[in-house]
Amino acid sequence: MPDVAILKAGFMPLARFPAKWVPVRVKKTRKTTILSPVPIQSERKRLGQKQRRNSMTRITLMTTLSNTMGFLEDHLKRTVPGAVVTTWPEQGALNGEVVVCWKPPAGVMATMPNLRLIHSIAAGVDNVLSDTALPDLPLCRIVDPLLGKAMAEYVLWGTLYFHREFDRVSTNARNGHWHRYDQVAAADKRVGILGLGTLGIQAATLLKSVGYKVSGWSRSAKQVEGVDVFAGDAALDDFLVQTDILVCLLPLTQSTVGILNADRFARLPKGAALILCSRGEHLNVPDLVAALRSGHLRGAILDVFDKEPLQPDNPLWTEPGILVTPHMAGLAKPRVIADQIAENIRRLKAGEILLNRVDPALGY
Image (cartoon, rainbow, N blue to C red; front, top):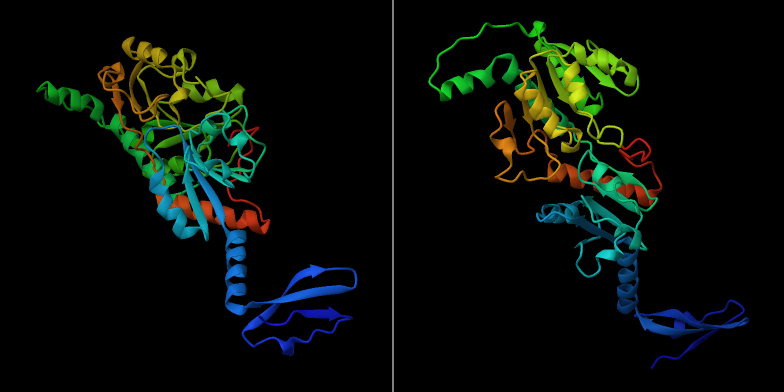
């Protein structure tokens, strides 16, 4: 057993220790520090373990849906250094520092003592903000440029579906009925985008490039090249009365729940159509069905619903004039989601501004 070195007045006889040993402090008084030797390899191992613990990031995947978010686990482990990923409600999930979620269980995050960041896996965060016990912590969302492009393509397809009469032609085809409709120029079709956020502007820009007459509505005034913009509640009716095809791309907030209702449908021109690819809660379904059956609205494409997946016995599948698609308008890629979460974790640790941070008061 090597000797114990006693350090007095700054003197430490390191030469007394073998070359493979290093001194480690074990006891300190006001005048004396006693050091005991420890093998270098053991000390390196101890320091390495401590460093790994300090650099470790505990991530909890959280959802109430039956289809879990396991598809993200491998991506997060590859992109977040030192990531330890747990899925709620597994053991240890409540120790997470970062929650990555979609429709998380209410109240659970408030019980997580180490939580520092809440991250949605999508552009919308309404399902997170609905938790009345949500901790007052940074909340971020995903903004995927490719998702916006895909959403714009879906909106263009839906616009063409009504503009080029595919809704009527497909019905005629099932009945063996040959009928050619008059061809109308894109410039003579008025497409209105309800919601001019990132996705709405991308959709409006693509539609404009094809030649459609495009207008948009938002809560606050915005400038979008080539698009007639209506802003504020007072301008909503003026926006609706000049819209042949209404596209809803609003965020879901308390003020937009049920915004697509009988009053709004009545202000659209007779024969107008609806494309819904924002949130199912925007739509009052009975009001839509009534507007279709009365003949005031021509048709609707619905990509989102308040409860998903839409059950096989739901009458919307077979309601004349309605086309159901399985929430496919725009999907962020797992790699993109993981990369943005990893970057925000890095920024959080470095004390930098987070990307795509949500303002809870606005809901986006």
